[in-house]
Length: 159
Ligand SMILES: Nc1ncnc2c1ncn2[C@@H]1O[C@H](COP(=O)(O)OP(=O)(O)OP(=O)(O)O)[C@@H](O)[C@H]1O
Ligand SMILES: [Mg+2]
Image (cartoon, rainbow, N blue to C red):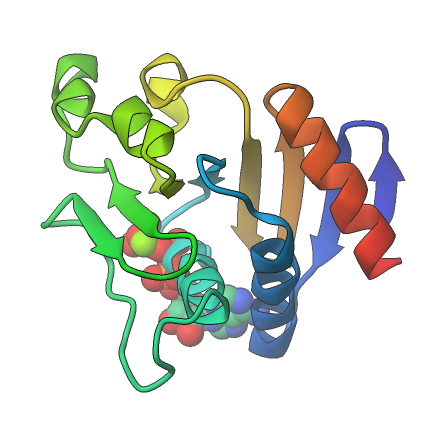
């Protein structure tokens, strides 16, 4: 693990490492938080989202599928989660149809794959997580003060 003020990088070679990161994040996430998951096809965005959703109480024997076609899947966890995949969207006005800021105001934790082109529409703040498959890494970058706070708390929890 390397540390910088508003950035934190984890090596997540084994699936267990990604699951553990999901558990650590889930402990810290609060209603309305935003995580943007960025990385190539197969980088592990859906896998990490699944780890978080399961850690928040979604039954282990129920999958967390990719929302590529449905665009957004809601989970009645505590707090509730909205998991979106914006890969197939054409432009920002389509993101607004999903009302991401409204979901956050209503207390949903918002997990978004392929959201890097739509940061203003997703609302301010949160954490941008950059995933790579070779080597498998997660680099967390704060998008604002709440993101910084989350990264500091995660650093304390995992060091
Ligand atoms: N350490 C690891 N962390 C996460 N996933 C891993 C790891 N090792 C292997 N995998 C595998 O890598 C794949 C990651 O696929 P996933 O669907 O999460 O990628 P994605 O980034 O969501 O891709 P897409 O852009 O298609 O949505 C899964 O099949 C998972 O089992
Ligand atoms: Mg995916």
